[in-house]
Length: 175
Image 1 (spheres, helix red, strand yellow):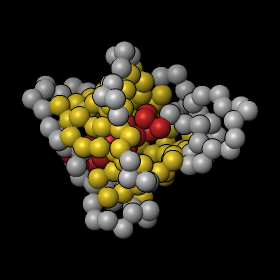
Image 2 (image 1 turned 30 degrees about the vertical axis):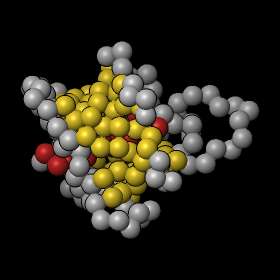
Image 3 (image 1 turned 120 degrees about the vertical axis):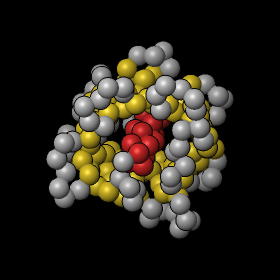
């Protein structure tokens, strides 16, 4: 399923795998997100000393792509992801009831809702749209301690999926 972008006429694209660092999504900390060839592709800038927890996802040229920010006065765990123009792109909410496993909802402002299911703390989960997997988060691609991968299906907004992953990591480690 292609959620973002019309890619008709293009050759079959391969899945993208990115390397994330476990428990390093800490406010005030900065780090690079690398592709599977260990090339830097995105930068996470943790903004310290702000009223709300804030992470900025940037491209390799340093341009802001997404701002990840916790909501104040929230009823349950909630984070907003805003585009560079400060428009809302997505809202992540933890479900009230999750007896068997973590379950989160990602409301996309101009697209279908996403479901996140699995073990967020252990980085073994998936992101689905309308029952179809668009991303898998797992440690299976990397055998390096404190590292996990994000495999994204072709045609997705990779930066948004990585922003969602960083937000989930931040939210899970706050609990």
